[in-house]
Image 1: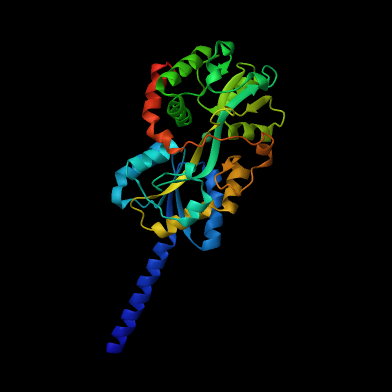
Image 2: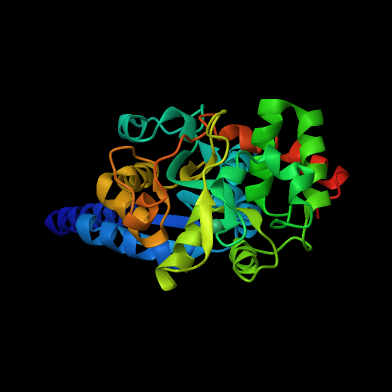
Length: 334
Ligand code: FE
C-alpha cells in the first residue's frame, strides 16, 4: 500500500509539473494590429519554440477597455498595438510592466521605446507629405508648416483629426514649435482644405491621384501598398522637414501586461519580434521601416531614398495627445 501511495504521489507530481510546463508554454497576445500581418509571425515563433500563442485581435480602444475590466484575471500576457500614443495610454492606465531586456535595449533605439521600458517599438512608420506628380514639383515642398501657406489654398487633403496618427503628429509639433504656433499652422491647414477630411490615408491618396487635391500627409506604407498594386500610381512622396528636425515617425510596438501569467514567455516573444527575421517580415509584408537598425528597408521603400527621422522620443506623442486633440478642435480641424 505505501508503495502505491508513493507511486501515486510521484505520478501526481509528474502531472503537476506537466501542467506547469503547459501553462508556461502558452503566451496570450492581445493585439490591435492587422491579423494578416501578425499571425504568420506568431506561427513562425510557435513552430520554432513550441510555444502556443493565443491571439485575440480587436481595436485598441476595445483591448484597453477589456484589460481594464479583466484586471488581475486577464489572460493577456502581451499587448501589441500601433502608435506610441496608444502604448503610452496603456502604460499610463497601469496596464503594462517594466521589461528588463538587454536584447531589446540592444535592438531598439532609445527614441523608439518607453523611457521606463514599459513598451518597445517594433516597426517604424513615417508620416510625411505626398503630392500629385502632375500638379506639384517636389521643389515646391518643404515642411508640414509650409502646407499652411496661402499658396496651397484649396489644394490640401487631410485625414480626420480623430485618428491617433494625426494627434501624434500634432503632439510632435507642439513639442517643437509650441502650442500657439502649432495652432496657427493647423488653422492654416484647415483654411487650405480642398474637401472635408478623409476617414483613412488610402482614400486621401486616391483623391490626390484623381485630382481632387494636390498635397496631403500620410503614413508611407499606405502609398507603398498602392504602388505594389499599381506601380505608376501618380502620387509622389516627399520627406518633410529635412532641413529642420526631420520627418515625424511613430511606432507599432508591444509591452508585457501588468498581470501577465507568463511574463518570461511574453518577454521571449517580444524579443523575437525585435530580431532580424521578424523585423524583415514587418518590412517586406507591411512596407513599414524596421525598428532594428540592422535590418534593411524593402525595395519599394528604398526608391523613396533615405530620410532624416525626427529623433524626439515617441512617448511625447502620448504625453501631449490630449493637448493635441484640444488644439485641433479649437482650430476647427474635424
Ligand atoms: Fe495604419
